[in-house]
Amino acid sequence: MKKLLLIKLSSLGDIIFNIPLANVLQKNGYEITWLVSEKGYDVIKDNPAVKKAILIPIQKWKKKGFCLGNIIEFIKIAMELRKEHFDVAIDSQGMFKSMQWMLIARAKRKLVFEHSREFSTYAGNEVVKRAPNPNCTTNIIIQYMQFAKYLGLEGTDEIKYTLPPVSSETKAKVDQLLQGLDLSKPMVVICPATTWKMKHWKKDNWKQVVDAIKDKCSLVFTGTEKDNDLINYISGGEFINLAGKTQLKELVELFSRAALVMSPDSGSAHLARATEIPAVVTIFCCTPATMYGPLGDPEKYYSIRGNLNCFPCHRRICPLTGPEAGLCRRKPEPEEIINIVNKILQNAKHIV
Image (cartoon, rainbow, N blue to C red):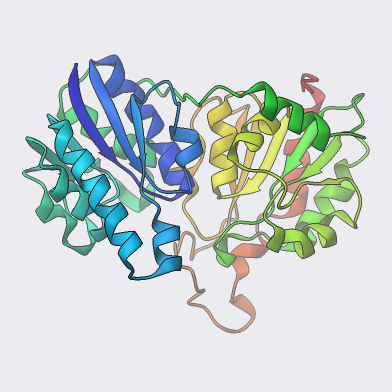
């Protein structure tokens, strides 16, 4: 087994996008150590594709600031990496925060993408060309798979997700969270929020969808505690609201019981796809659907966007002003999503 260090610290979606790469690497005889931050640690720790997950507590370090405790923890992780003597290291993050770990690890072969951000390309001794991506039409998973192709590995056309096994304790917690759910109907999970405001579909659009499908399914909403106001508006205070009540492990189990998961371009949407069980409808506002949409059966995995000349701008702040400002958040029309949901529910298996 060759020892390989994979550096992908965040975000949750990007971490999930790297799991197919990890599976190809493992299948070809690499023993993978993965450096990951708090956002994705629970989907990498105990993941069958990974030998060892090392937590880089970025959020904790930022919160505590420059202090002796953080320095000591940083040094301990650095020493742990030095002892491994990695044959290969891959920096798929491509930023300064990942570049420093690439330099610390001292792998024999250090693979980086060309034209990476924050000078991180200079930390590598082998530069990997990205796949052609005119108008953001190449899926990000295919981009990450370029590292495996560069290494000459087999099976790079296979998109395989793996997630950690779900414990009996997690299953029992989800059972408790879903108490009162109408089990006679397929469960639909709606995750309406993410960290980018420009990715948020108009809340009145969500409300129209909920009103149209609520009698055909059992609705469950997820998010953080900060999303409660949005969820209460969309749901009218009805249905099951799990905002702030789930961690990643509970979400994996919840999504695995659903017939359908709906979300904007978010970690939740990509996590739902990684479970490989529910249908997934991802609504794209400002980010490219062809680049971040779920790969797979087009009758099961949907990437929906509005037909706008400015799409995709891929910006956190809309560059337009006046009536056109934030137009992408109003598209697509709710009727398009309702038609897709009705089609999915007609053939939905009752999973809960």
